[in-house]
Image (cartoon, rainbow, N blue to C red; front, side, top):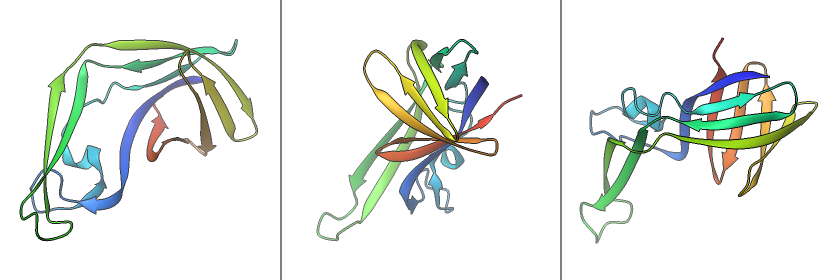
Length: 129
C-alpha cells in the first residue's frame, strides 16, 4: 500500500540520449525533472490509481550515417501532455503484485523498497514516503 513514484526508466542498451558525453540505460539520468510525478497509488481495499503528470518524455532516434549499423543520434525532450489518472485494482501474493486496469493486466515485482514493472522494457519505481 502507499504511493510509489517512478524513479528509473531503464532501456536495454546504454546510450547518451541527451548528447552530454555520459551514457546511461536510465532515461531519467538523461532528462532532468521530466515525468517525475508518474507513479502508482495502492489503497488497502485493493483499489488504486496509475497517475501521470503533465510531462511526457519524447525520445527519437535519427541515423547519423545510415550505412553504419547502430550509428544513431538520440534526441530527448520533455514535452507537455495531459495529466492522466487510471483506476486499477490490485492483489499481492508474496512479492508479486498484479495490477488490473481497464486496458491491461501487469505483474509488478516487489524487492525491498523497489517495485519493478515490465512493459516490454523495464522501468522501476521506488517508494516515496
